[in-house]
Image (cartoon, rainbow, N blue to C red):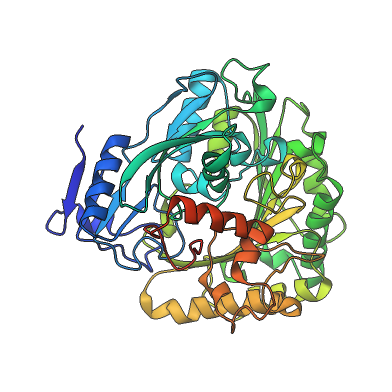
Length: 494
């Protein structure tokens, strides 16, 4: 199919102008929906020759206004670049940047009985997920998504404003090697427009025909609902402390416990519940004893009551059961989010802050902190092996609020800032690199980190995301985007 152009008069424009976070509208002169990599090159060349502002997106799940601001003349929407097939030059799989997590999970399993440690949000586009490093329910077993990245195809602009399509591979050296490395967690909108990725797992080249890890036969899956009415502050503190302490004990790679992944949605009390989602590889532990022991240990002796549902499911069914799709009340919502990497359990004072804010007078039925299992195979690699430097954490958190209506912006953003900044008050309002925390995740971008009123630490925003890897990213930026064609409020600086 030829590339599609959608202008303001097209009835599809209003749908394209809104992405996942409805706080921000993307309103270029026109959207271009390329069908091939060559379409991307042609559209990008036309834009830079004419001096037009240009940006791109894949799934549209960026939490900040990086695509719409500064205002662009043209936005390349990559949804149609969604083909998935075998690599042309050896084992591995080539994935278009516009493919969604759900599309990739199904294709890998149904065609090759293979998998990758992709995220639980099924509608997220691969272009953004991989750019920030990518993690998901299999990461404790398999590492980050970029730990399996072999090549990246990207349209770049040189200092003469010429656009070309280049492929950078994991075994390249020199400038191409640096371009590949920059795409192992450097964040989106920095170096060019990614059109496709190739995945090939070094650890599985000798054992799997496609060169990727095989999917489990079955999963133990369980969703446990805890009514707030049955959880006082003492039991809440105990449950949260035990959640972290279990992960502190079981964050080594290649252990049976690394086959377990949990997401704890610690919702505002107005929602009425907290929810724990757990999955475990049943091939590793057929009876699910690790999952049972983990879940029971959280509430034992506390008086808190958990209402479980789930069971043993085939791999793809279990994966979809645990996924978080774009549906229901989050559709059309405005939102704000923050993040943190945790090296150790929060202090008692921090958990008291969390409990108090979760019981504050706030219409927060979609306000929560999400604590995710981390560690395991993720922590095997060195901080400089990929751009993602956080390689010794045990839990990763997302701090989130969603609402309907611009008139509620100040209320919800204020609640989120108040909770986050008081929780991390001892380190300047942010999770600095230190004994208990290790910065933030670039795929949950937070422009508050640029504000010295909000980030009162001595660590600038780029250190919180990239630590010592930032200087190397700047060098790659100067080489591959010397005109700073690709930029936004938190892009890599020249």
